[in-house]
Image 1 (cartoon, rainbow, N blue to C red):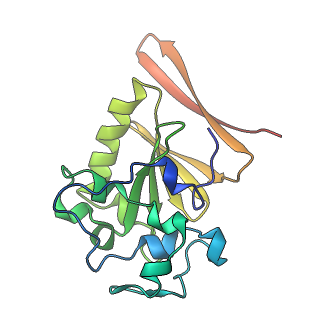
Image 2: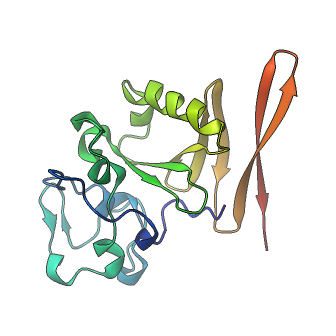
Length: 184
């Protein structure tokens, strides 16, 4: 899995809003993600964003931004409290690994550990393990894997880093281990 948590190609994600969903006053994606074509770093407000109001260059915004829809926008099953401006994080799926990525607002780094979020992330983690998928929370480029029996700190993850999930069967049941490694 290529891991660049705060930089990605949104065209690789689902890019159709669910019926009845719109960004409204939510602009958190304009803060947490890098936008290379604008020279915008991750975890800083885009200079074209009016937080809580929207994009100042909406009509001419980069393709990178045009193609992006967070999971709250694409999955009508997620309730209102999962909208990024309320939850303080943005959910997406990595198309290659199918990992659930949780990009946290640096102004609320522990928001994902609050309820109802944390228990749901744990529930998803348990369900995803059967498919060797993970839930990864990012505070900027620092990753944490959420597992049903505990969280695993992954440290800073760069473009050369990969994550592998290893399963070991024991007499008491499966034990999962996450291995972080580099590719050249």
